[in-house]
Amino acid sequence: MRILIAEDDPILADALRCTLRKSGYAVDWVDDGEGADAALGADEFDLLILDISLPKLSGFEVLKRLRARNSPLPVLVLTALTGVSDRVRGLDAGADDYLAKPFELAELEARVRALTRRGMAGAPTLIRYGPLCFDQIGRVAELGGERLELSARELSLLELLLRRPGRLVRKEQLLDHLCGWGEEVSANAIEVYVHRLRKKLDRGGVRISTVRGAGYCLDTLVEAVR
View (tube, rainbow, N blue to C red):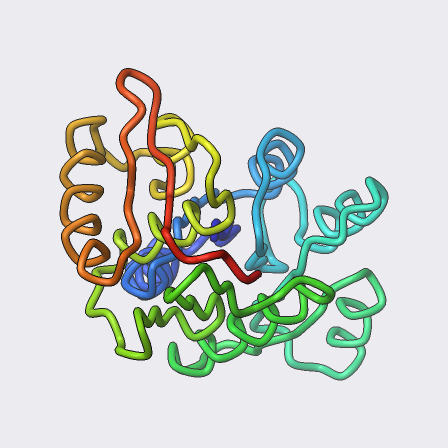
């Protein structure tokens, strides 16, 4: 899953990025409203974490433009404005949740999970494929009923493959899904992550097949259930 953070405080933004990346999310960051509006118009995200007091274009205006494009993207508003009228304005503008500064990172993570779950309304939060089960909200994978010990990058890789079982996933798609802007991850590194994940899945009858020069495909000898 990919998250966009729009926050002009670099220290807070860095803390958010580190926390969310450890949980397996790909995270991008912009420090002003114009950058946020441009990013939202150009790329696809699963969640927006939006500071209201942004330079160049306020968070309220970013939110207004986002909803004017009929985007259902879940939005978590962050702000030091704690008045009731400010909260009401943000929610009326289309925010899905509101978190006042200062806040605990654990609470933010919980709200991210809740909003992600809400944003997937109608879609399964548990993906099952043969003996493999992946909880997209809790970020936990099980194989044959046993929990898999996976790194954040391995979890993100598995998630994307599970969303396209039996179909080719190109290396470019993996790079986009696993990495935020500015992260240095090479195609060779992707091969390393795939190799590590493949070793952990092979014992349970789930295979990651390589389509030479193109990408990867998730296969299983057991009939898939989704």
